[in-house]
Image (cartoon, rainbow, N blue to C red):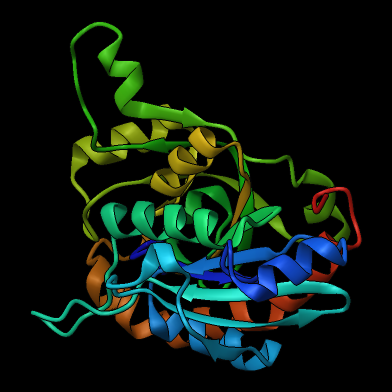
Length: 270
């Protein structure tokens, strides 16, 4: 997310629940999980997919995450949002909530595929426009985990691989781009240098943390991001993000159901 708004949609029942047992017995397709950070990014997609609220799985009881579920054809789909911070009344955006939300979704719903959906910043120099929808291309990296101590430098960068969605992007006419994640909405000159070194087209706040969890749990993963602002055109990122958020979220809502349908019909969901 630029402020990477990540919605999580997951489809399936909590492990060990009666519905989960029935799912296994019927040999139903494993669910797809869409993970969002911000309610404003998630709710239009949840409404478009017709998902309904469900109770959290046991692993997420006591955590702020919220869930919805439904079906797309014969495949369960569940939506998960990182929820709200009770102290400040704002969305739980950023790397730490995203990692925990991803782990809870994977352990609670055992999805065949996790998709992180949300918003991101990009660059006019890379051909991006506000409202463009990208799918992830290349490894997921961090741009502000700078640890100049031998192999720790590469460890801090991350370099987590997602599934190859090149064919999906080509079929749907979508752009692809490398995603760089960090803990701040704004950026520094050093961050810009890191974006260039990382080959990043998109800058946000969750995807690399989710990719880290998916690497440890062997969960298939990719990301879908709508552009809210252009870092090389409007350096004042918070203002541009706020001004363009509705347009970017509308673009995400238009495109994501089609991405989901194509994913379910392909080898990406297996």
